[in-house]
Image (cartoon, rainbow, N blue to C red):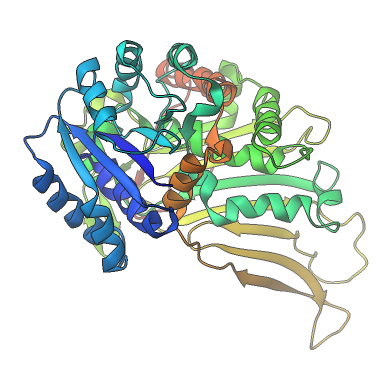
Length: 456
């Protein structure tokens, strides 16, 4: 059995950096191999597209075996045309030569403003049975847009054939949250407000906006990272135990978490959120210009490159526990982790400094897990020291995008978001965006290479 993928926007940055390298990584794992059709309005033919695929995979796949790259390149074809025209989409689907029983995937590796026009154009296309449609983030620009896109997709295909993908959900550490919580008797009984003081979900980056500044200026950190990626991580941390790990059971528990997030009014936004924008500075010995001076940026938009939002999940399990979601660009260090901070012990029985809070850290890329514990000291056995139990998790193979693509080919929706999740994410962030636009929270500045806006 082979699999076919029609990649709309096949010459774009998303395709070059992630989709095509991901396909090369899984080529040998798909029985019968992959058939890939690239679609865009570039002046290419089959040979030109094959050269482009070889170049992009060689640059971004990180040493993929030559045989697998060659196998992928040999099976790609090109369709030139406007991806919002039904005739182009019909030709592209027809050019993907797979059997009637083989999976066929339409991958929208496009700017999000084209999602709805493409989906509407598909209404005038003779769609093959079982077609799977993949939509990248951001899913809409607001709640109304997400609901409109969901409705258009729902009129076209059943929910189990729609993949609103998020490669964060394919990361090893994120998946390990399920096993860590629901397969260990020792941990899940502590996983509640009775024992947990706070949770941080952090994705700090040293990388600046770079060549994405013109896109990023219409998005910002809250839309680009918090609304989808970090809220998805929140669902895994805070969900109730599912009956099984089947797609429908996991999706239901994730949606429950998002529905339980307390909405922020203007006063809550002022109290529980921060936003910032980097100025010129130095990151890892490299000079970084101010974000406002980057090509394609309109400083008057006041787009944030740093966003911090503290949310509360109003459930029996999590009442009173703050969940702090934070992300920023051009910061001093890459810090990508989930930190579960446990409460203090109820009574101090040792002299000297107070015991540190136990912290469980789940680091993303590289994947690590560590736990801080207090033990008796070596020099004085009745004074405390802290030790860290630390383990590096096995490196993922294939990479998250490879895992994601395999899941789509297999028809497994667990690495994507369902319609309700996409809309609930916008319900949570829209009041923040509106209050920020209205000046409820000042846009703070921080130097590139710093730790972000100064702590209050």
